[in-house]
Length: 292
Ligand code: RIB
Image: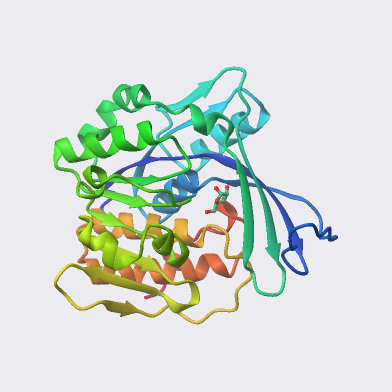
């Protein structure tokens, strides 16, 4: 099997997870289950998903010089990621996410303390230029500063390498960036926050793939009818990182040269496996666990 080179630029977090009977309302205190400490972060989840599914992945990120950062780096190495451009910021905490997972529905609520993720700079992207030279595809998400995102978009665009952006957590992006993307993969609420699919397509997005949770995914391209892709039906345990798994899987399939529709079917199947398992990175599937 071919192992395409994929560059993932994004966040690394340690997820502090508690299963709860119900996601708490504002002002409410509830008792949950035992605290789980799990490898997470949207960028790292996407990188690990892509590696487990067959990608040769270079991860560009920043961690702090604390125990979480050391553990994250060791975990990336165990997963076979190229960590040459995982930088350490002295005196800054590594990223942490506080996560409540509804033990009935598997739905989640997340608060991120970005820590060292907020220190990723355009200069770091420039320092990793050799990684971009070899890439077949670039994957980005938004738990890092705009300057790093924009520099990575330019690094891909100037080399003619497709850039896939997962706009999570959603924030407005300038048209000059949107037009340089090959693919945007929001979930439904992110798509709405970015103005909705019609506005995104009118704003220069070429290929919009909106993930719909148990509803699968919808593909929209200007001038063509939307196409729906169902998700395999599963009993959800934990939806954390399902979107990251979708994005990582999509990236691998496209970088392997699969047509877009087959890549989306594969990504839906991979994300469905993730949803049946607890934890962000611990729950990500290997290639032989994804059936299409
Ligand atoms: O997308 C899931 C991820 O969001 C979690 O792993 C958490 O770290 C936050 O970044």
